[in-house]
Length: 463
Ligand code: ABU
Image (cartoon, rainbow, N blue to C red; front, side, top):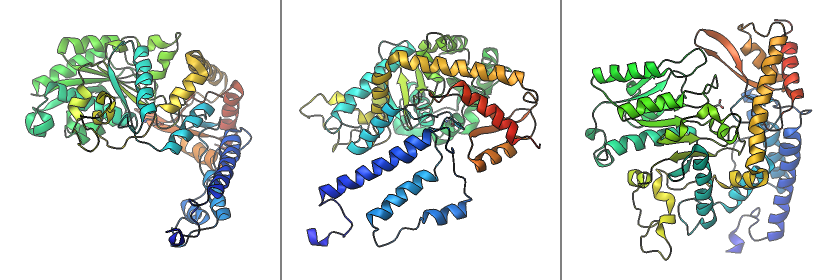
């Protein structure tokens, strides 16, 4: 057997395995952690796609490569990747590199297990339960259920599927034949996963009724009432309202209590997409923005965003205590979920989800929480709010910054090619393209905000 192994395989040589991994960890520490989070380094090294393909030499060959070449490749992958932990990375709703969360991610990757049964993930089954319990407690529930999903979009789709199943349990077997035309409601500022989910679940995008939002981006409950009446008059059956806590573009928080009242009056499932804003629940000062969330039936919350736990860490939380998740999605695969196991089979949580193999997403959050404590995480949220206020005040002081002109794409190209920072931009309604500032990186200080404003001025000097 040994003779047939390829020359480059290291699995027969523990010393070589260890040496390789030490070198790789060294490169990761140097390039991705130290340089990747240093304000004096570039946030990205822009290359045109054809040039990047050449530089990376992507094509896969039949011959294996030397250790030195593999280490060079690791270095190049990091070098040409965007450093999302960099203090000048404002481009997405996540930023920063928490060392404890990273430690959790490294351990998770190394152990390489699947979250479906207690027998192969004993630590993580218990840990996931504990973390979800903590998140539920912050929502305001002392019981319930939940699961970590592959991203907020999937969490939102789960909520839609559960709401539909609860009302029409027959649809698990009979599919769309068991259903009348259904209607769900969300604001025009909602995340695009709501209409994607409607398409994916066979509801169709027409089943999504768009509710008006006010000038700050918050759903208008009176219009929700109107849309429900309209849908009913057209012969549809309303079944779910999805409110948003922290909309993707404007960061608005829908008035949850008023929306919960509407849901209660009409007997509708109340889902809150708090993928972005859920972490605000950790702040005693700001959690009032989510008042009423405890009245929801389901909540999607992504600690990989504002808490910086690292992609992906997305919880779907449920108020339900009737095993709805498992009843809706369970398929009782006999090779995984044997009922005559030697331990409590309720710990085999894999049949709650539509996936089979499922990543461990709880450890990075658990370890970071253990290290920071709830108080440390609360400070991060409060700091993000404080820096956002600082940014707003500074913008007011600078001439030219209130003017919304079609310059965002030009400035974006210039900042990326220079590698100085990254900010996302988009149009919104009748507003022209503008920069969406995301203040999430826990290492940000006022100097980074000052740099951002000065750099925007520098990049746009000639415009
Ligand atoms: N999934 C919504 C957030 C995407 C973004 O980072 O802008």
